[in-house]
Length: 489
Ligand code: NAD
Image (cartoon, rainbow, N blue to C red; front, side, top):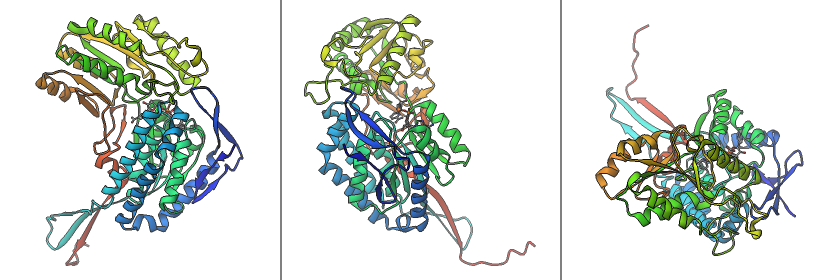
C-alpha cells in the first residue's frame, strides 16, 4: 500500500524517523491507508519552510486578488473531486456518504467565501484630530500560523482555517487529527495543483503530543488556531504562553435545546433527534441537553423514544444508513463509561445504553442512540461532553428556569429554543450565553456567519468576517505632512 506523505516546502516527504501509522475504518477496523508519522523534527522543518516563505514576502505582498484567485481555484478543484473526497471522508470517519457530500459542498463554499473576501478590505482612513497628518489603518497577515484540527469534521474544520489564512497572506503548517488525515492530505494535493507557492502551506502528519506540541511552543509560529477538546486547548494555551502566541480556540460544547410546550411538536422532535444523532453525536454543537417544558415533557419523550428506536445504524456507504459508528474503540469506551456514570448518578435510561446486537455491526465501533430522563444540572452527564449519541433530558416549568438550566454550563458554544411565541424566543435568546443561538432550528450554519464560543468553549471566532480577521494584525500608520521640531528637549 502506498504510504501517504507530508507536504513540506512544496515537496511530498516521508517522516525523518521513517515511522508510519495505519488509518483504520471505524465501520470494520480494516486498514484503509498507511501514512507517514511525523514528529517534532519534521514539524521544525515545516515551520522553517513557512517562516522562510513568509519572510521572503512574495505571498504576503501578492495582490489580494491573486491570492483570492488561488483560493477560488481550490474551491473549484474540491468541487471537481467531490465524490472522491466524500468517499475518503466516509471511509475515514464512518459518517454516511450523503453527509460527507454535504460537507464537501460546505467546504468548497468556505473557500469560495474567503476567495471573495480576500480583496475587499482596503483599510480605513481615520479622521485625524491632529492637523497636517494622515492616519490610516491597514490589516496585514499575522505571519506563520499553526493549525490543529480534530477528527469529527476533518476537512470541514481544516477549511475554516486554511481558506482565511491563505486569503490574507499568511503561511501555515496544518496538523490534522492523526486518526483522520486522509482528506486533508488530498486537499494539499489540490492546493499544490491550484498554485499555492512552495513553503506557503505545509502539512505535517502525526500525534498531538509531538507535532501539535511543537507547533504550540515553537517561537517561529505566531498564531496557533486549534479546534478540539477543552483539555487539549488548555495545554496549547500553556505552551503558547511561553512566546505570547496569538490563540484561536474552538473547543467543546454541551449545548442546550429548549422546547416550550407551544412549539411545533413534530418539527421539534425531528430536529431534536437531528441535533444529536447526526454523525453519531460527534459534533461540538450537538444539542445534547434537551430541556423540555413540563406540560409536554412526557408526551415529547415518549414520541422521541419511539422514533429513536428506528434509527438505522450501518455502513456509511449503504443508502439507508442514518447513523454510522463512533470514531474509535477508545472513543466508544469513553461513551460507555459516560453512560455508566449516568446510571450511577440516578438518571433514568429510557432507550439505548449499549452496543447494538446486530451481528453485521460487531466489527464496527457502534453505539445505540441513547436517552436519559430525570437529569439534573448537578449530574456530570449533564455537565460533561459525551461526544456520542446520548441525550440528557431535563424538565422546566418557567421561562426563567429554562434559561437558568441552559446557562448552567462551563461551555457556551451553541443552543436552541423552540417556541411559536416570538417575543418569548427573543427574551430567551437575549439571556442565553452562547456564540450561536437558533430559534426554531438547530445546527444550521453557513460560512458568512461567525462561529465560536462564549465561556470555556473557546477564544475568537471562525467563519464570517471575524474568521478572516483572526488571521490579520492591525497596523495604524500615521504620516506627518508638515514635520517640525517639537522643541521640548
Ligand atoms: P482532541 O483535543 O483530542 O484533538 C484535537 C487535535 O489536537 C488533534 O489533532 C490532536 O492530535 C491534537 N492534540 C492532542 N494533544 C495535543 C497537544 N498536547 N498539543 C497540541 N495538539 C494536540 O480533540 P478530538 O477528540 O480530536 O475532537 C473532539 C473535540 O473537538 C470535542 O471536544 C469537540 O467538541 C471539539 N470540537 C470543537 C469544534 C468547535 O467548532 N468548537 C468543532 C469540532 C470539534
